[in-house]
Each structure stands twice: as C-alpha cells, then as structure tokens.
Amino acid sequence: MNASALERLEMLLEKVQKPARYIGGEMNAVLKPWDSVKIRFAFCFPDTYEIAMSHLGMKILYHLINERSDALCERVCMPDADMADLMRQEQVPLFGLESRNELKDFDIVGFTLQYEMSFSNILEMLDLGNIPVYGRDRGEDMPLVVAGGPCAFNPEPLAPFIDAFMIGDGEEVMHELIDTVRDCKEKGASKKDTLRALAQVEGVYVPSLYEAAYNEDGTLSSFAPIDDAAPAVVKKRVVKNLSNAVYPDKIPVPYTDIVHDRMVLEIMRGCTRGCRFCQAGMLYRPVRERSMDRLLQLADSLQKSTGYEEMSLSSLSSGDFTCLPQLISELMKRYQDKRVSVSLPSMRIDNIVKQSLEETQRVKKSGLTLAPEAGTQRLRDVINKGVTEEDLIRAVTDAFECGWSSVKLYFMMGLPTETDEDLQGIGHLAKKVVDAYYSLPKEQRAKGLRVTCSASVFVPKPFTPFQWAGQDTIETVHEKQEALRQYLKIKCVNFNWHESHLSMLEACIARGDRRIGDVIYHAWKRGCRMDGWNEHFKMDQWLAAFEDCQLDPSFYAYRERPYEELLPWQFIDAGVSQEYLRRENEKAKAGTVTRDCRHGCNGCGLHKWDVCDWVQNPPLKDTDQTSAPIFD
Image (cartoon, rainbow, N blue to C red; front, side, top):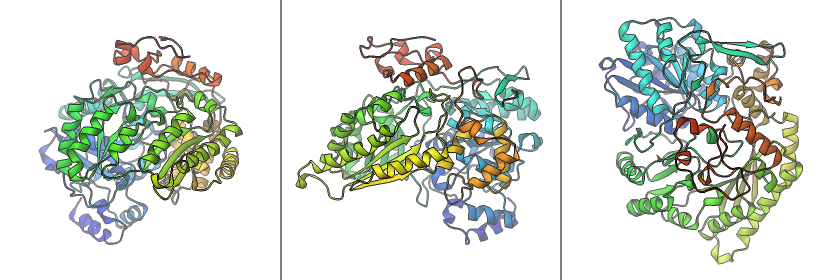
C-alpha cells in the first residue's frame, strides 16, 4: 500500500467501530520481510476479525506457511460494513494485517469456506482488494485465488470465482500447492499452465478444467474434465497421523475480544458416530487422535506463549477421546495454580462423566451445552443420534450436582420424517431437565436455573445420508416454530430459533451447482454482504438475484432428489461412498440405527484408502441390532 493510502487508512481507524480489528501487530504475529520469500500467501477469512481469530484452521496454516523459509502468510479479514464503506469512499484497498500490503500484490489469495452464508463476502473482499471477482477476468498479473474448508466439498457455487480448491485436510496439500506455484513462478509459467500443474496435485480441483451440462428440467446431465491434466475424480486429502501433523505452539493474541478468546487443543479429528444429518462427521472421517504426550507438550507451549487462562479441548466429539479423563486430570494438575480452566465443547450426552465435570469446574465453571437434536427416541433413531432420554437426564443431573445451573439444549426442526409429536417431545424433554434440577435438595443445587432450548432449521448437506432430502418450506418452518413456542412455555426455559429465510438460502447454496455462482454475484451487486449477520441480511435482494438468473430457489432447497440424479459434488471422493450414504438413508426411513464405527466397521468406503484403524484392526463383531460390516 502506498504512503497516501496508508495515511488515509490511519484516518479511517478513528471513524470505525473496533479499530483494533485492522491494526495487526499482535503478540506472536509473524511479520516477514516482503522481499525475503518467493511466495506470499494471503489467508483470507470471509468474516470479521473476531470470528477469524477464533478459527483453529487459520492458526494451523498461518503457522505452517510461516515456518517455511521460502513463503510468508498474512491474515486478511472481512472488514465490517462501516470500514468497508469507508475503504471504498477513501480508495483504501484491502490489505494484509501484518505488512499492510495490498491484497492484489500477494501471489496466492486463499479463502477458508466455513459456512455458505459467507460466500458474498468473498466477492466483497476480492473487489475491495482490486481483484476481479470472476476468475475468467483475472490476468497474468493477478494472484491465484484458492479456497478450502468444509464448504469446498461442494465447490460448484464458487467455481466461477475460485481458481483452485483444496479438498480435505490442509496440512500436507498446502505445502504441495505452494511448492507447485513457486516452481511454476520460477519457470515463468502462464496462469493456465500453473492451474494445469495444480490439477495434478491430489486433492486439488481446478474448476476451469471441467464442464457442466444440464437437462431441460434443470438437473445436471453431465460433468467431466475438458483437459487431460484434470482427473475425473478428485480425492480428498487425509492427514493420517495427527500426532505428527503441524500444530502451532504459539498463536497471535488479539488486542480486542474475539468469539473464542482462548487457546485450543485439537485432541482428535473425525467422528465414528455416524449421525445422518452431520456433514462434518462424514467429511472428516476417519478418526485420528493426538497422543497424550503431544497434547501436553502443546499445552505447555501455548500457555507460556499466550498467557491465556482458558484451554478448550476441541473435536467433533470430545468425550470419545480415548484418554480424556487422564488428559483432563493432568491438565488440571499442571495449571490449577495458574488459574487456567479447561473447557469441553462438543460433548455428547451419552459420554459426559461426572469425574470430567468435577475436574473442569475446579478453576472456572464454563457453560454446559448438550445436543439431543430431536425430541423423541423415534426421531433420534432416524438421525442415528445414538442417545436416549435417560442419557440426557443423567448428564444434566450430574451437572446440577456439580454446581451447574445453566444448560443449553440444541435441537433441529424439519428433520426427515418429523411429526408434531417429535416437536412436542422437545417440550417434554425441557420439562424433564427442569424437574431434574428441582429434584435435588435445595441446599445441593446452585441458584438461578436457566435452560435455553435452541432449534435450528435442518439443512440437507452434501455427503450426508440426507443429501437427497428436501427442506421444509418457509411457511412450514414458521408453523413449527410457533408450535414450539407453545410447547416450551415452561418456567426457567428460554427458546431461541434460527431465521428460516437464512436456512433456505443456506440449503440453496449448499446443494447448488455452478449456476448458483451467478446468483451469488447478482446478490452481491445488489448490496448483499455479511449475510450471516441478521442486521445485514437482505432476503429480498437474494430473491431478486434468483430472478435475475431465472432460477428458482425451491428447485435447490425444497426438492427431494432421486438417487439416480447426478449431484453437483459427485465428482469428489470424500471417502464415504454414495452406496453407503444411500444405505444409511434407507435405514433412516426405516428408523434403524447403525452402530458406532468403534464397535465394528460399517463399510462406509474408507477401507479402500487404508486409512481407518477400525478397518485395519476391527473389534469383535457387534451384537447390537445393527448391520454387520458391509463393503461397497
């Protein structure tokens, strides 16, 4: 950024909310000399600084890239609306937090795709960085624009804007991507030749090398590569040994409050439970655990380098970690005198143990969040949740006995086969949680019971058994929300719900094809940005954008898809096979549960990759009412 723009930036900081978002210079931030490296990577998070700095993936890749002698990584966050407007007005380009160099001056601009409602922000950030939003309009002097993260498993809605997608775990493929771009740059290769080289890296998808065609009814008729360099199937990347994987021993510590202001230990990756609505549980298979020794080493380093007084043990299902009680006990022993607390997000109802609750609240009592997901056992079996009402009551009773008085319960509405009885069941469960609190002697319970029930709208996601399901219409969602309000009129119970229009749009994008990219563009041109924030969301403009493109949102969100339909994401091999997902969908319709993979292989497809310990060392045959191992 030139001197004039830097002066204007300094003036803007006096006019915006939370200027600390834009100044950089935090403890442990890495500032490398711009000319000392061959590849300059901008890690772009398409949401505000507070959310970006809470994201573990950014911290891992920021550390990984900056450990290289030939590359640097700088952070770029989506400016809030006030700052974005002033930057345009004063012609201040989007910049890296570390050096304040312009976004367009980096070699690679990489976005993490964490949730669909951030996609309009990607276009906003490119435009603020003086980079053409459509890939076809970017010349040889422009950076490569890449993306990864969970939403990259259906890359098609962003295909017009992104040059290359990284599918799966990023630790290894990031090195290969940088190596390839560096080598091509040194050879003076064209952008097209660089993209052809990237397409040959396992786990990299280059959309410009593929072509989609459509039937008269709007469904996808074919999808295939149009260049010999591009594989017909793109296979996700998997880091096999998590203990040996790169993990930061120091992280930037913000000057301002962020959403998750604490150090994070990722204790394991993946989940064996097989919940049929859960995309992450399918995408991040197989389960890989970090060793106790490695976790304790990282905990010591992070505590010393950050000074944080809270440590979160992160995974999709922390209670399934093999050594959880021993790990918590050792962490509390080491850090109790330093007043460092340990929190356990993502705990399942059926594996919360009283010992863990008692250990973690010795320093500070964190909030307790439980996810029954559905109000009746029938529907919990449909979604393969694998927990019972007795599990929930035991868990909250243990918590109340340990001094908790605030509990959050997460549910979903609009799940396949849902009935009014299932909605009533949410009210019945909430009432039983309240009764569990009052069943304790008054002197044994903490004051101020608060039970918060949140009901999100089910969104069918790619690579789940429910990827073929239709979503409830907005009208149906409103009716169900009103019914739930009545069922949850219970003393000490609060009810939160999600915006139905937002969930409908999320479904459109999550299951969208390439044509949705033009909808995103038209919505952005109509002023849509920061769509995940209620105060900025403009549903009328999104609907107008669909009209601009002559597309019907109900085609994407509400339509149940037949098994024989070609899905936009079907060219990606995510490990789980389509046959397995179909089989699980049929079991859902029958209300039949599938056992936890740790009790025996269910043949999801990962056996082909030789990466899953539960296939390599299968336990004794399960005797539950579940299927024996089946290989597709």
